[in-house]
Length: 188
Image 1 (tube, one colour):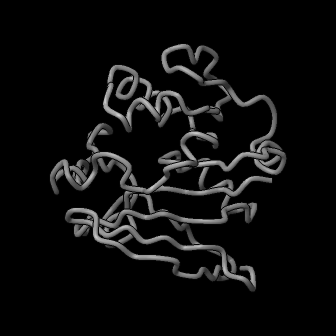
Image 2 (cartoon, rainbow, N blue to C red):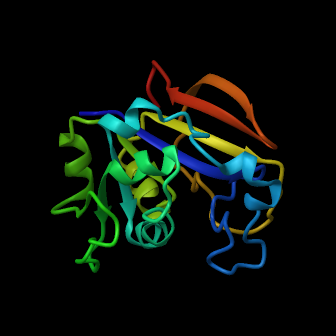
């Protein structure tokens, strides 16, 4: 099984929903208020994973991204467009709007357990929460913004037992911080 890497924009209070404002929530757009240098390019330091891995997306995130990325031609966007993409959806059938996309055939957790490439999950909270519930997330790369939203969907839902991670690195990324957390050696 490849490693599962979750990348997310997150507020100081743990909210991950509507960072770009596209959902029209009252606090939406919080990540993009901090300027383009904070969100542009490979802020999550995916590097080689973009060339060798696969991106796993839920339907809503895939639909948003399929409208944003295909017409961009900068180096990061070109790599993003070339990356293999798998969409976890029961309703979406046509994924031709974004190159190298396919619809997941079968169980999400079975797919993740059998995929040999590293898997990057971005946005796609229903997918992230399903992988968290199945204890399949190996790494989190969180770009934390200096905003407190107050309401919205949190990255980490209420848990029955704690999950322990190991801090791997912290770096400034414009107005935000990029923190990378790995699965703890002792497990969760």
